[in-house]
Image 1 (cartoon, rainbow, N blue to C red):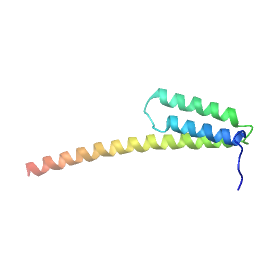
Image 2 (cartoon, rainbow, N blue to C red):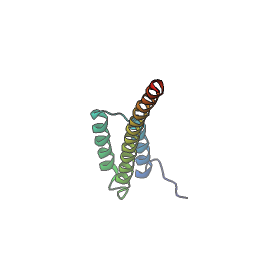
Image 3 (cartoon, rainbow, N blue to C red):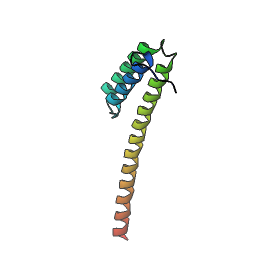
Image 4 (cartoon, rainbow, N blue to C red):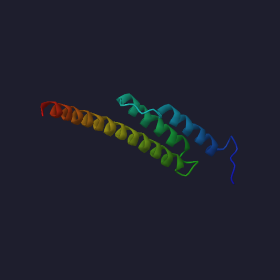
Length: 98
């Protein structure tokens, strides 16, 4: 198993990746959130791209895709709740009128 010294680019990259994830883990539906995520991801990529043969780009892209999926899933969940609530309301109305 390979071990990395704390001074290696790989070790520093993973520490920065963890910081990036912590900062943006809670996905927000704001322009500021998405702009900051893209900007910080680009900084991360540029900082490590040469030393890690593109791994920083793949990690940043994977994390941005993860955040995007969380966002879409939360919107779908909210839409489903609205649909269920409306349907349930209609069912209650129908039951009272029959």
